[in-house]
Image 1 (cartoon, rainbow, N blue to C red):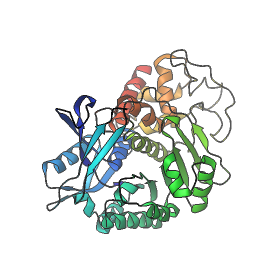
Image 2: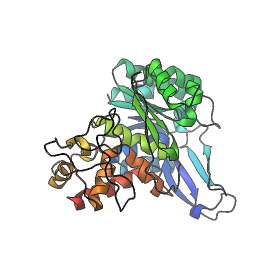
Image 3: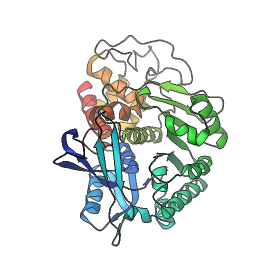
Image 4: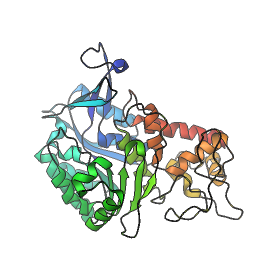
Length: 390
């Protein structure tokens, strides 16, 4: 269950700057909705709790969320406030700058009553972010209420700080929510405000001491660090699989959505790219280094399974939605995860990484679409590859 704001996004066509563009494309985006869209495509059942205006933009947000497989039953329509807007500008150096027009928006009136609606749905996980808390006093109280009450009821809390320099400061609030957090998914640049350091080992130690169960430290082009909340675990670095970065905006949201979907599906906390079916847990070093794939110029994440070792049926769990569970080709692909090159190796590479599906594909295809669509399109292509590999 995501709790936050989705807005209509205007983006200059062809990457032109705002000052001179002659036209713009229209999309729908927002941190929590991006996350939910990626999670839905990865096989998770998702729902969005939010508010939109009684206007064409609000209807567009609801329609877009529904088309992405995200439940909209908890999206309230506000007759007195408009739907929020934002505009993305591409600077001459290629950097992206986002301009928000959300003061007084429908979502800026989110309250503890809305948080209670989300809790009443009894989700497995509630996802909140600093962006929502920065919308105003009402949303700030709502995020606090949702996180604390979810924790008290045994509902997992996923927190993505999503700190933005141009928004009201919420570091103090996020710090107070850390003890109630199950999954902390933060960027390397957000670690210093929250924990006073960006050293991965220190971040994990301090987060665990504060009560966090599981941490993912995102580092953009450098991949991420992953470990559980135990003091005995050291963070494991996973390099990024992105080959070409088209647009980094929203990549972290899609990464988080696919990661949470994988965890809900039962995948282990740290499944390194080099882990093979039947290999030791992620906390142990792999027993062998696979031979580099000629086609992809990198070590594959799965090598031939040793004779007699059990298959890794859980490898594809994030992809086995209800309409795919009966497909024998998917089951056969999981049993035969020993890659020998070509499409099958590529399939295993994506499946084995779980949450990193988003990291790989958003960099290639986020472009002018809704930001989460890079991850969602990746899942669609993945399903086609699974069928062809079978």
